[in-house]
Image (cartoon, rainbow, N blue to C red; front, side, top):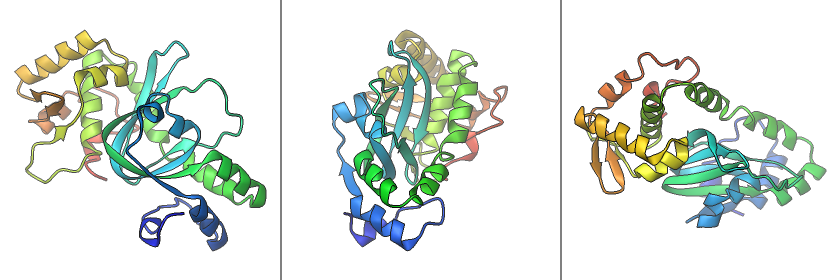
Length: 238
């Protein structure tokens, strides 16, 4: 169970009875310093529901042969995960931690027990099903765009979820290898695109991080891209 200071930070997304909220709080776990196994096979995403207190992660969907086919960025105040009592062998999601995260996590086994006691919990599950809908749909649209546009979109989406002081150059603690894994784009093509952006003075590279030196100019690269569902250029620290 978590303390009252943490419980007050939870945003339930729908009106729930005090009884159900208290039961949910009784099973809530504070999680931080996620292990490699929790990220690589995304056990934390497949075995419960989590609320992000701090930090930023990408959630990537992959095929059984480990090809990335879709990805979204989640940050402070977002919910992710799934309630699945089947425990299927195929786990399509993996996480990449961009900024260290602290989570409030609800285990599937505990949720299953609560569901047997109070069907109101399904109202909560239903509300969470809309949590990342726009992000997933926009991500699917981006898969039909050219590779440079997909990379630029990811950089801007990451910037929209990472706090930075006005006037400060946004810094993304992400490597080109991670960008390749997140997008499913070959490492060489990622390098070519990032080098071109650096030549245009839109980004600046340092070891293990990328500075977005001209966020407006970077956003202009997406002028001809269909961002009708979600435009991350308008989402700086929601």
